[in-house]
Amino acid sequence: MLGVAMSCPALPDGFDFTDPDVLHHHVPLPEFAALRLAEPVRWIPQAGNVAGFQDEGYWAVTRHADVKYVSTHPEIFSSSLNTAIIRFNQHIERDAIDAQRLIMLNMDPPEHTRVRQIVQRGFTRVPSLPWRSDCAPVRTPSSRAPSSGGARSTSSPRSPASCPSRPSPS
Image 1 (tube, rainbow, N blue to C red):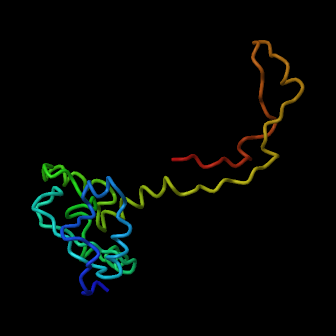
Image 2: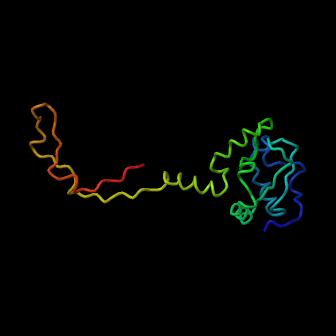
Image 3: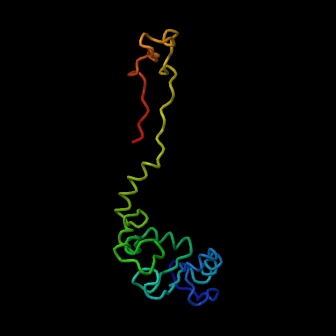
């Protein structure tokens, strides 16, 4: 994985997958497919600071196995350093890039793991308790008639303490 392969003649010199003009016209799926076949890991040069970073380009990683390797080795490949955002405005200040580290996608372990454990609670289904008919409120004929105060009574002869409550979504 992450090995050297032949160059990709299907990509024109200077082709940049993050170029807004390219993305405006089409999603570069054919170019990704050509690169995946010929050179699955390729350095894509960019003119200095064109994407807002103080570097000269990025690595395009196009095969699933290689992407999985990169994703599971944060000690080598960091999302936090320059974020996972592929292109910023070229005039962005470094402080604004650094602020993007607060987004979970741009965190590396152990911070990502800590935040994920908090966030996933909101996406985890809380099992419901089974419905028990013996805990349903019962209306008696007398409870349907207006009481002396004019309000309707909805009291139940069953004790709420004997009925399980549903967990509150907290």
